[in-house]
Length: 415
Image (cartoon, rainbow, N blue to C red):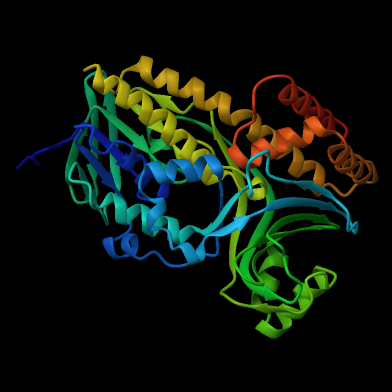
């Protein structure tokens, strides 16, 4: 007996924060939405702490307010990001990035699992959204007439457009035949929370030290998310250390700049792999979030770029629906692809170039990155571009953008 298809207007694959926020962006539009997620309902409603802290730009904060997700974030867990600092080698003086005129902070830090919980809490109240948890996609076909998604339990969903938000290693992107460039950085990132004696003063620090990268993401109080990047075997060795031994090891790696350090959470490890597809769309299919752009976390913009894609694609879908046009038309998808590629590709390439330069250990690379930090500290247009990047999550058009792009390209070729 054939299974009767469940018909919707738009299907979302992936119930992470980007997929949920995309559903929120389409609330009240009259579109019938379905969201498919592998995790059970309990994991969506109460996701566990995973070590990841998200640096929200001012633009992302504004969008979360519009989606009515912001008000669900615990105010006591939102930490203001007052400025950012880049250090190179053993130098104590680096390049500082401060908020622009009229702003008191670059953005805000909040734990990833709290964003997930808030976004799910908002999305589950939508009467126009059907949540399908604990379900896997085993089949995906698209044609000029629409989309058909087959689930592992035999259910079939149909619609006019499918939007993938199913991680940087997207199974739906592969199933639909979109190739992607994978940049394996050959390193693993260890993340955990630690308290420390020396106040962080709300400053996020990225420290490119000898054969390691360290980061301090300031949380409320004398507490920070600590990020250590090393080859995988060294990260695993650090994870296996007893808590007291790990604390002394981190004090050593930080040259005691944070004073006594105390482990305040589990330790999590994530391999560093950047992913950028050859395109974001094909017939009646669009990728958002990490399925579209899988960023290296050094600029902390993965989720911010995900929200940028949500904003762009949802606006196009809402406009088309309001004009009674096809929400899965190739013309609409091409516009999304062009717009989101212009907004993300320069940042993706620039991030990879910076990471490559600042993790290279040759003498010319060390000299060049010292010079670049000094240059960025002295030249105001470069500072303005980087400040805007951290606050808004996109490189601005025009002269400063071109200047920085040339600078980074030169750095890449001279490594």
